[in-house]
Image (cartoon, rainbow, N blue to C red; front, side, top):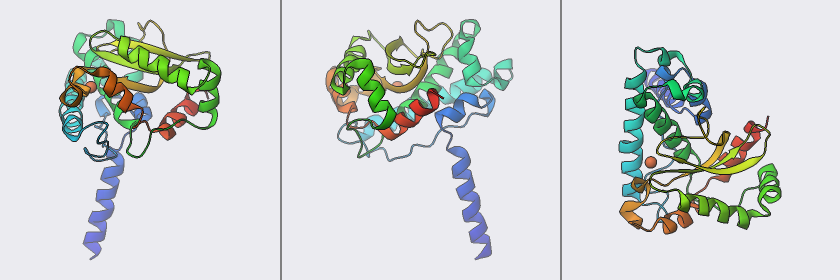
Amino acid sequence: MRRSIITFVLLLSGIALNAQTTLQILSTPSGKSTFPKLAYSYMALEPNIDSVTMRIHYSKHFRAYYDNFMKAVAGTPYENQSIKEVFANISSAPAPVKNNAGGFYNHALYFEIMAPNSGGIPGGDLSDKIGMSFGGFENFKKAFTDAAMGRFGSGWAWLIVKSDKSLAIVTTANQDNPLMGNAEVKGTPILLIDVWEHAYYLKYQNRRADYVAAFWNVINWKVVEDLYAKAIK
Ligand SMILES: [Fe+2]
């Protein structure tokens, strides 16, 4: 009995240690990064995002970026740098470090800001800020959707907090992100959508617009509000 309690506690600690949030990922030495646990099941976002896409996206694509990032930094000075430092000096990083650092962090945030039984509209300070910045939530939704649709090829659309604490919608190509030193517009990401075809093709084929429309039903605004609160501190 005693042994099973100890095992149970150890298992719980293991789970807790493994549950690295993106904010923790940003400040952890890259070589000590852990693969984030998905907080919901593969089928939890049905019918907006299907379970096969979720399984392949999380356990194959995301996992490969993480594994390749760990391989790329192993035995190099990048091992001891936080991923935030790696992003800041990305121009000097070799391609495997750059692409996989981006792929790892971007996907960690993507899976973190989604949840079942969510969607709707943000609350609190973020709601006010979006209202002031974009002239209302519907205008913001349209601008973000337009950005996601307008990103040519593979990439991401983002809502970021700039250094002056203003909000901006931007897009990046491939696995680039707004934390990278060479980003056209820099800022702290609080919301993002993956518009690589691997994120939607199995269910939506070429209909990116339908995927982007469905994405609004799975945004976990509580997490986004929390990221906003930390970004403006
Ligand atoms: Fe992806």
